[in-house]
View 1 (cartoon, rainbow, N blue to C red):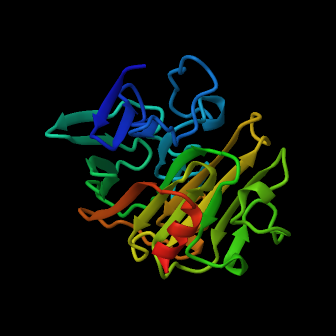
View 2 (view 1 turned 45 degrees about the vertical axis):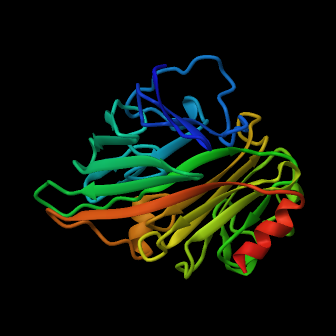
Length: 291
């Protein structure tokens, strides 16, 4: 697989050039890897319309224009969308990586721009509707992080607002303490109500590091969290998934208030991922900065 690299003195980022705009690696200046790595030595080139789970579930993929496969308004939305298995058009210039791809199912134009600024990854997104009718899309950033010992979450909503979207049951443990999740299972939850604060943090206390995600809650009002403790292919990872809708499939998200993109309209949003290193008791220092 060919890759494109962005690098500064604090972060290195590697992206697939061949398909999907997949981010395959995010490291700090010590080589500490944040993204879940492929358990296979070589990536298989995916084919349009096939199941996402049949291919390499690692790194960071863009789910667009849906997560779950569904049918809505005479459009078939493939599993995890239709831009992850196809080649994008890339241009790297002056430390900025610009990419674009058309959604085959909807005709929408998806663009992403990545720039490293000190210890922060700046991602700028836009979706344009050049078609002759309004369209619906669901977007989520599906960035799989390696599940490490003693990791914790700082969520922008309380546990009482978390909706288990796998079986609907309330979790009988602290969902922010990843070591509390029973082994050999999969978990996913969203906030039941639109966010008031667009931020989330993944803490690595034993490694004195954290990843902090920041975004506009008016444009991305929902935050999904996916976790597997071995229940999916034996993998151990989690994903922080900011999204414009709730939850996982376009038809369901429309029922929950998702609005269309009109003819000629452009939607845009940004996400900042801050790579942080802490001295000493990282968790205590990180929490104090969020107060």
